[in-house]
Image 1: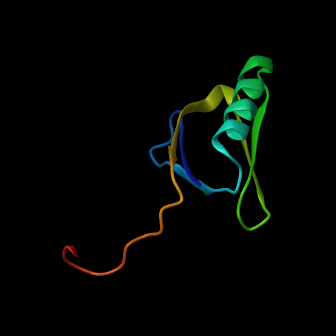
Image 2: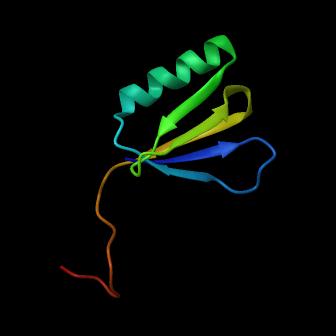
Length: 75
């Protein structure tokens, strides 16, 4: 799953691709916001992304649909 994270006062989004489910990310975010802690997400390559919960503006989730390559419409 691909997650776009908007961070306050930062013009660019942070893009994280993770194997975690929507529910796992939602629980981690809720816990981080509740205690004023840090949201920790694991990425597809085994790394970790740490974001202070009080700086998160939004999270946008998108499915694991493969990216399309090429030009024009196919029917």
